[in-house]
Image (cartoon, rainbow, N blue to C red):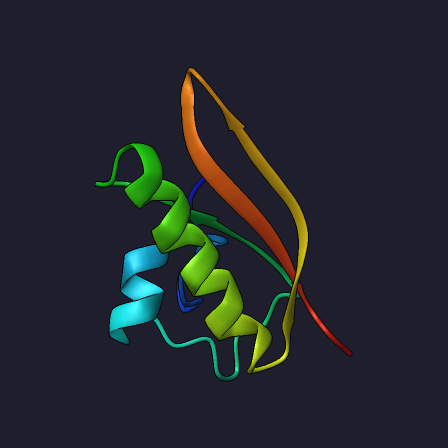
Amino acid sequence: MTQPSGQLPRPPRVFRADHVLSGQVRLDGYPFRYIALTAEGHLGNQAFDVVLSAVEFLETVGWELVNFTDNAHFDPIAYLRRRL
């Protein structure tokens, strides 16, 4: 699907947890209420740590954990919602 001319591209809803922690991703003024954080680039316990650390950071700025998934086939993913 293409964007109509003159419209900005739609912002993503999925972010790398390490990018949130490093400040590469800032969610101030983010237009949507729901996001997902992934552990792309990390394995095992490090994947859990980076995702949960990003969740804890985002909780301090108005986001809350809604769900967390992990299985043998996928990296952990945290689903968050911005508090109203």
